[in-house]
Length: 102
Length: 249
Image (tube, rainbow over all chains, first blue to last red; front, side, top):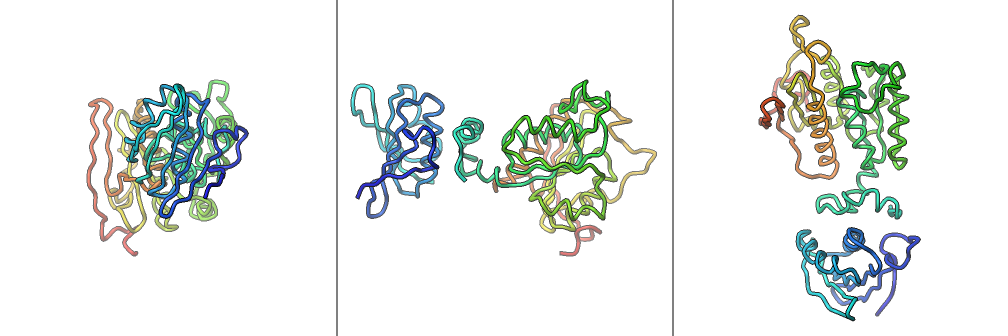
């Protein structure tokens, strides 16, 4: 089942706070769209989104910033989360997958 | 509580910290701290608490700004000399961050008014400059079971402690009574090195935040910093079973 919700309030810039949820049996997959953001707001928005999730849930971070593409996996590993991989969806857009561990 | 975009930007550097994050920042915004004394220590403690968004910050102060205050009491400017500290401080703090509700108490704390002031706050921070006030604030914090952060500086040396009533040692467990009036050392007659006041105030603020967030604090220790030697020591202190202030739990 697929639905949408806002993870932390309805902001003016709806584009990147709107999160798509794919409900699973044990854990859900959330997609946060941070396209158009630059560092450090890429990380801030992604981190805030991850905080709202339950342990075991997966956050898919949809981004288009090259610096964030390199930095986000390292940052989330430092935060104690599990980095599951990065998927290129075009030559300028990627999805970083993080599983919430703490 | 949801953050506004402005709040996300304002508090972003704390939100990025693993130990704080959005969760911790929300907790800070919904907590309350009372600062007693808006002098050297109080200036810095108040500015940090306000700056990073403690939801409600109160302070007790009845003095006016004096020219001799300015080197270390960085809340105030030369234009404020002669003004009530509460007025100058309130204005400056409110300008720093309007997310914070600032309460001012234009009075000296005493046995009679303490309960009415303390009841609004989760944590007390003692930023006074004399022994008499420290003993009084310690006694009142224990009486009303309010956690207390107490700090002091003289010359180049300062100390910090966190008192959790009936759990850790209190001020009175270490210092039994105010020292003899003749040998008493205060900033006004011994001198004080301004940046050391800043160091101690920063440690006090750090401990306050860690206490609110449930992170590990200096609980059970007395922390001593010497600016001349660039040395910091942490001494483990136990409760005094015969302490006249906190022996009955």
